[in-house]
Length: 160
Image (tube, rainbow, N blue to C red; front, side, top):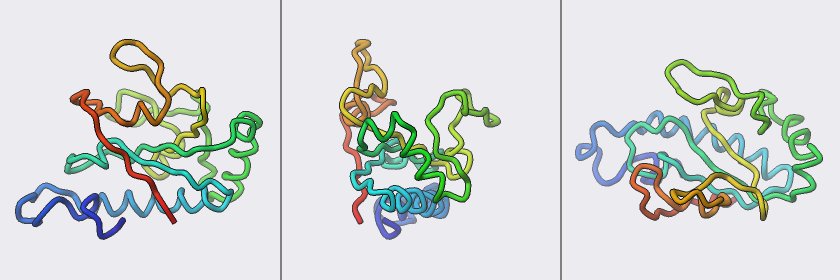
């Protein structure tokens, strides 16, 4: 991914002088750390989206989700396994663990503070949010719509 348009930008650098390739590379390196941890505990289906996969010159972060077993998630086993690996011990999706960050209206998860990445578990029936009509949506559907324009968009699957 380091040599992709997601990091280097679309076309020639002179055509996109505001494109922040250095910041995007930092995000990719942070993402690699967390993805390797997921692979280490047997999670293989990982997807990213958000402004990082769009044409925003300086995305704030990388958002994503991964498919997992609901029992492993609900029991806390997955969180414990990941925190045994991660030196930051930042794997949690508990809303009470979110902290404020200067200049940001919403509170962020510990993994965001440590890596500027938010990766969420996904399994059938887990709701990520609601669409413009108030209908609940799981991550695949939630991520396939641009939040700024409401139009359809793709997502990126991370593969080993």
